[in-house]
Length: 302
Ligand code: SF4
Ligand SMILES: [Zn+2]
Figure (cartoon, helix red, strand yellow):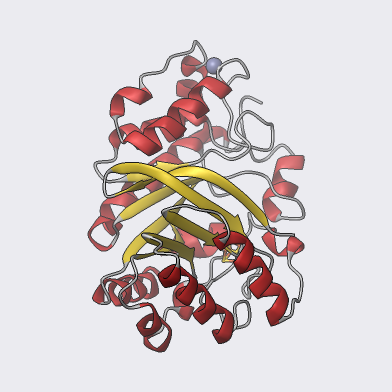
């Protein structure tokens, strides 16, 4: 059922309380991305059951509310109009200072956005990469950079904030290609985006990524690659390294994973590059991976 937790979030440069919820819906309508199996947790629920979940979120006291559906908040098949408007009314009633949701670009339409006018709304879009070849062939995302750009400028025309998710290490890419692709994507998208969120690929059940991983043809990214992106990016960028340290998640050597993941999380709150001054002897192995995976095309280290 619904997962709700409290965390910290940046709001106008300050660190405030945030209620984050992953609500159960009938799930993403696309369901074809190579690294994603979120829809395995989906269920067909009535409007009443959806509204009960929304009530549970707004019973918590916070300045910021994040609602994730593991799909698209603006997809009417997931969140019907009545429930969407109920969320909007709750945000107003409870004086929530910022609402954060996610959506694929095709659901970002004027008739939906106009209902949220006057609300401090941030919409996350899974751009993953600015490179159409990478997004189409390695991720199977099903929309183009052009479509992302149109959706982002539509959001901005209403005064809403745009968050772009970028995927670090889609399948079929070497560690260095993946790192460079994210840095390039930041450059190409930064004028359209208010904040980036770096997603580190983890191996989810029943996905193509899992098949490759089981055949030793895929390794999730090194946490060092994430640190490198965060150090080099000259934009607001956050990263929550889910499953860090696990073999299915982004990881380094096993000894430094918790410490490096914590540094990444701290940086995400403070945006202070000093938080990224972390070291471990496995940095040398990571550098070897960067050099050689371009040629080996398979992971060199566990
Ligand atoms: S990554 Fe997003 S768009 Fe792709 S299948 Fe998963 S929920 Fe749907
Ligand atoms: Zn290490």
